Length: 177
Figure 1 (cartoon, helix red, strand yellow):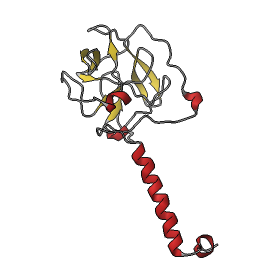
Figure 2 (spheres, rainbow, N blue to C red):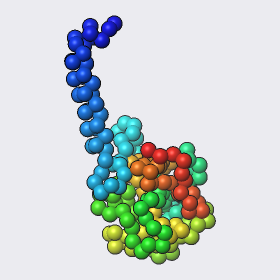
Figure 3 (cartoon, rainbow, N blue to C red):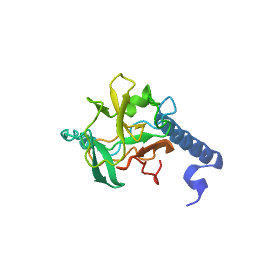
Figure 4 (tube, rainbow, N blue to C red):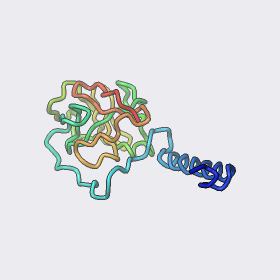
């Protein structure tokens, strides 16, 4: 089949392609959040994937095996991430506003959070909401709103700024969205 019989004229083909391109650009723009913080939560899977998080463990931080290898997880088994705009040793988080909505802080009730399997230096800072935010090697830790179950790593590499964390506190790199 030739293009003329499918679309009627070359001009009509250009209109179809232009409209399709604009739709794709619109969808891409809708996935961005304000404040240059990366992307909005991913919506992968069906409504059935919105499984409640597993019950909290006694550790504020622990390790778990994921498709990225062994990563740090919070007390609910959810993958923990670092933000590329945070500075090690800073006393506050660079993730505020809409960023903090999509990337909630890993919080602790204690200035000395309990850990299992973590070899990096664990501490806390005062988070944007005034609660204690857990740090690893001086970097604040976050969860990703797009992760719905233990083992999810949907935040990995988003915007080339967000990375899961290894037990030694280093980011797990290599995959970016």
